[in-house]
Image (cartoon, rainbow, N blue to C red; front, side, top):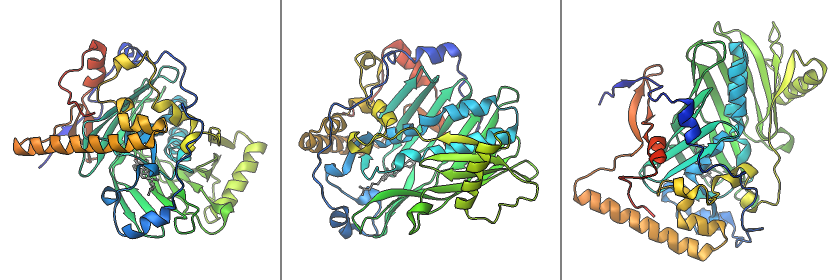
Length: 432
Ligand code: CLR
């Protein structure tokens, strides 16, 4: 079926609307979980996974102790941790400079994956998650729009940018590693201070659990990433290096920003778990054939010598080691349920999901029985729909096709925040 082409900004918001959606987010963000340590039973990952070689994630049933108290919807919201890079990008006068910050934003999304060898809860069909930050000036929303295959459709808005895409992945357990391959394109509409709005797109790289057999599991991210500015023609080609044998070369990422004529303008190098530098590319592009580790060293020293030529673009927030489940401080804020927020939330919001809440509170047995109950309830709903010959229709998104890139994507209908303002949630299924 040929889908109708849809203009990207289908939903124009006013500052007033944005302010209204900050209701309930007045309290300072949560700084810690109720529990101090997650004393989960230590089971060998290999012991449980070895019988599942060749399977994808949807076919793996794992004990709840392999979960972390986040949902996949919230894992997508983690992309919002470094949106200040987008605000900076919008303030840059030069499009190649804007690209440096947009590419750094795309790479910053991986910092929080370190040490997170746990399965987020699989969202129920129709489950939603909203997250707003008055202090940062954005709101984020995501809905689980498909169960088989699992897909979440997300849309984030702020005065200077909108960011949207889907969380569909292909995954496979190879024995040595467990690879998760994101499928969808991510779109960024940037509204630069001194230029017309621009559309950027990129696809996420592969996330992989490594070290399963050796009993020292961690997450690596690798592969090429092409960020493209469809409006003015700049591209940034980044390469996330797969972790090799040497620990010193882990987490490396590097690449070039090319201007609309294909000429290298910026060299980017660093580590996605730590720092990313950029430097004006030399006219003969002399570092093009150097290993990224060497480029990183040169950029770091250039940044300390000539700040007009090289600079630190991004630095990872601190990673306290005493947060249960290895969560980051930003992730701790996501599932918080302050009294002020409760009356504003849709009844389908992840924060109200009982099994995940139990997991967060360390009640693992209750989490497991609740998880079964919710999945059973979801199956019953599905049977009802099948018998009535009905199909699930997402409440807040519909499928459309991008005018600029020609790709299909999930178009946000904008109604979520409007209904939130009325204080009455109508036509939502009882999924918990
Ligand atoms: C990557 C970015 C995408 C959305 C997305 C979907 C699935 C997530 C993946 C991200 C990151 C890695 C992930 C994966 C699901 C399972 C996997 C969290 C966020 C973990 C690392 C696998 C744990 C392994 C178990 C066997 C314990 O936009």
